[in-house]
Figure 1 (tube, rainbow, N blue to C red):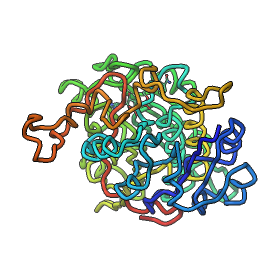
Figure 2 (cartoon, rainbow, N blue to C red):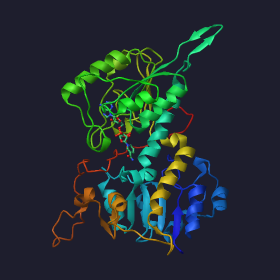
Figure 3 (tube, protein in one colour):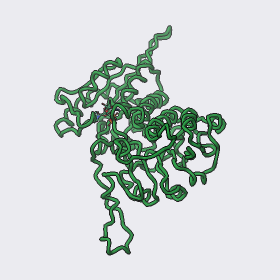
Figure 4 (cartoon, rainbow, N blue to C red):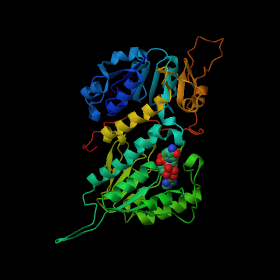
Length: 421
Ligand code: NAD
């Protein structure tokens, strides 16, 4: 086919993941793509250059991006990277576009076709392409591992000749993809697990994992559109807070994962609730990048409160299990890209009107094409007054149909595994 795929080493040095795996490289090569992987791109995910070569890739350097028809990335390309891409190149990444409208416009201007993988519709046929799910699943797992490492007691009940160690009590708030995996992981470690959510449907899933579902009677169901939660009314928030306040004081570990599309993360754990917990208790706030569920949580830090409760606020939690996260992410990208390959002609082509492309394509043909960002990219001035460079309009609302808005990423700190932040 003669088309080239380039897989760079991520320019953000705190990002250990990589957008291809030996398995996906082999499949791309099988389609007839020339695959070039930047030297060391997989190192932080425990994939060696040799493994990529054995799968059919050539090892190259950053400048090889200029020859690529397709670039596979974890994060949005920065300005320096954009300059190296050829016009018309398709770039797949988690683009984090909300609050970054200027960067979206720059990708349009650079003439690339930028696909925001996090906008993949949550429909059955796109499940294998859903990066939010694959990464949230691992983040839910890792949240429990981080909590267990910080918690200075054993998790399972141990009956020994020297006495009995009680099982840790783990409370998971938000039983979506991350929360359900956190429940399963905590159960495997022997904890006694309770969980809450505002969607009634979550109750059955929680119970099927052997945990107890807790929900206030005042809140029947706050399911919103597309299987997501809606924001609670003030009365519902109050009822939920009362329930949580009485429950949380008895917990050893709390994992919070609650998110509402297009809104800041709901505040679920107040400073007073944290104060009611015993010294040595651990809270992991997985929503910290979207404003946090826990009062006092700090992005990228572990805070120890005056009463000895540790609040963990790691960023890029999936990146803390990078070797696993990269394999799943790479497969998500492959599953999507495959839909654009004509297997007979052995060629890759974008159909901007196709459902999945339409939902994810931010820029194409030199323009911002995604409905949620088109307005922001429009020149503020009339065509006649062309002297002033068009400035992107103010950040658009996060609300949209189908696509799940992502946080405006705060400055990232290294998510070094093992090290305590
Ligand atoms: P999410 O990341 O948006 O939110 C995490 C959880 O927080 C959700 O379960 C939500 O209900 C909960 N939450 C929100 N406000 C809360 C509050 N005040 N208190 C307690 N909990 C609160 O959600 P998600 O993990 O992306 O999953 C959302 C839904 O989408 C789930 O039902 C999931 O099964 C479904 N899903 C479907 C597909 C698919 O069909 N392809 C893929 C992934 C997820």
